[in-house]
Length: 182
Image (cartoon, rainbow, N blue to C red; front, side, top):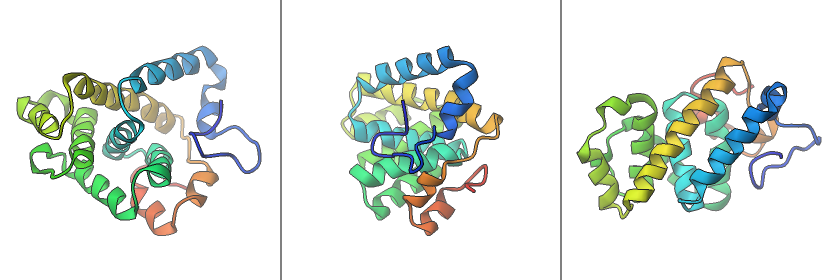
């Protein structure tokens, strides 16, 4: 157990999200198993983009910060992250020009407006090369993020300092859309 891959606590403490689940470790174990099963169908980049798209739409500062750290560490630069954030804010798959943007936009819509998804939205993902299985995996990623982000926000959980420390302050400000990051 521990922080996301590549994100280590500086003081050896448990991350805040693990402390939340300490009273229900079986739920946390089930969560980890669910995420592992979902991730089997997606490459790491697509999983992280979908997660940030959903977290952003849910106004989950904690999850937006955590998964943006992962994206910046392995997959995109700051401009790429900003494009992903803008795409998730727009929730308009038809207007996207790249795979990351389409995934983020679609995941955001799944998270907050699933009843209004239509074949055009799915076709937008297919246009960017996603298979039927990958489309479902993006849906599963966004739906799973709804659970986790909601639990963290409902319990008043704030992001860990290590997350804020790994990002430029201007990005922390841009990623703070719900519960304060401090």
